[in-house]
Image (cartoon, rainbow, N blue to C red; front, top):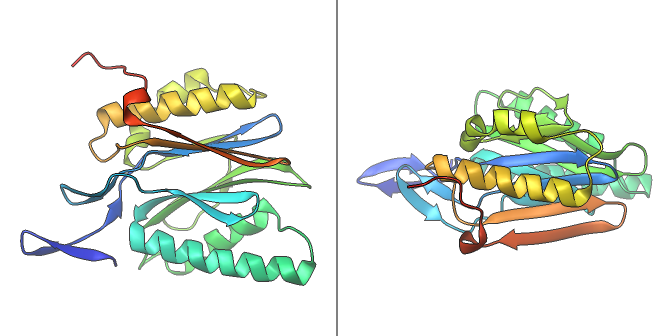
Length: 216
């Protein structure tokens, strides 16, 4: 565990966060806040929780920073080796299953919730959820982290099948901003990425550019 002393007590550095991924007609959009906490202490205000695994495959991480970084590094290595063996880009489903295998095998030791999203030639844009414990589920839209409880209803009401990329980017930015308003463990900036056959486009929305929802 990645731990630091706080008031004489070792506390793990956690990604108590808001992460999400959406499928759209032609690819996927992923988004996250950027705050990393150690107890009540904000260890990092600009963490990048959108982690590239391969050219068109990313993961969003929540849980222990050390655990999720280690798993992402292992899967990145395994997937790169697999791609060399096949002499072609790997499938998103393959990446998701590699995450599932590690999270399930070490479920008693790890605190890791992962969203895997990307595009491949076989199934297009895909989103997979690997919650703590190592289950694997494909979903058209998935949210995770401590801020997710504030936005499930918002996403249920606003996400529709076959949305455009711009609609999904706007919805993701709004949802993460809404979670950041209410969740004390989410904050910083909003990082977004869209992944399609054309590649990866990344954006950052700074704190003073985020939509405001509360009146306090």
